[in-house]
Amino acid sequence: MADNPRGALVDELTGLDFTAVSPTEFARIVKGLSAKQLGEVMHGELRSRILGEVFGRMKQQFRPEAAGQLKALIRWKITGDSDMVFETAISDGSCTVTEGRSDGEPRTTLVMADTEFLKLVSGNGNPVTMFMMRKLKVAGDVSLASGLTRYFDIPKA
Image (cartoon, rainbow, N blue to C red; front, side, top):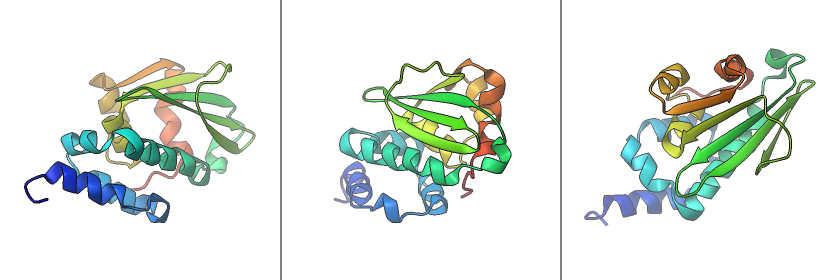
């Protein structure tokens, strides 16, 4: 495997039990990988597992005291092999996450590639820089989008 570092990296991450990885450990993993390496692992079943685990943890990382009475539907469109859509609904101090596009009208929609998404949710990317470099596109309430990080405990690597 030494002659195939991509394969070794994918094999290592494929064997990883993401449910046992803390948000801080996940942030360290993301920080330790280049943008190219992040792109290489975000394919097929591994991509689905990683995105599923990240979105699955949003409810636990939600900070209801910061959200107060906020009521908003946030749509996340993650581009890569195929577009994946998740929605985060914040209402009355609670947060729910669903996979797929609902009929609801999002207050804001965030569109970004796999790599930028992983950097953003792991605390390894600056959302303002991503937006300015057009790696993060925002439709709808830009003010809400710019403040989303305060509603969630974002790990630091």
